[in-house]
Length: 162
Image (cartoon, rainbow, N blue to C red; front, side):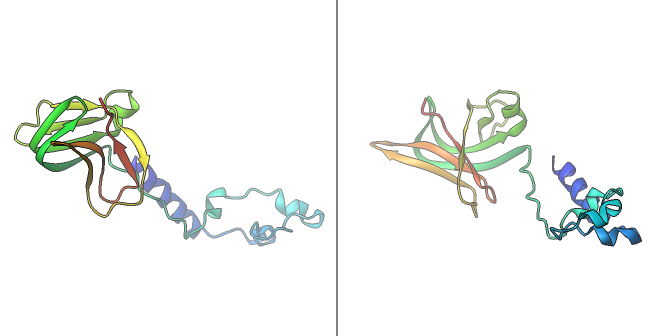
């Protein structure tokens, strides 16, 4: 996905460097009154659409397909139906999500071959996170994981209640 965005941006940048035809100056599409009756022939000529892409356009890179972060639950923490405590790895996989499979896997830090918890997350819009974030709700004698967010992302991933 990132490769496609990079390729589109590169083509757009290169297209702005292509010299325009001499008669193209009469079809300045930035001006509202470009195609008047007096210029009908000029405006019917082929126009390179890629050359009209603004140079200052900024593309947000797509998040990686699979993201990982380490988390250390200091006290018992409920994640879905499981109770976790200690060091774990949270993995979010956009390809699994696109296929309708559970997109979030939580592994024991020292054994990332078989997930301890899997679930479908809920997309939540947040402000851009400076660091990886895990939101916990404190309850009587344990915490409950509510959501997590990767550094640099504006999307958080909600954890289902059960």
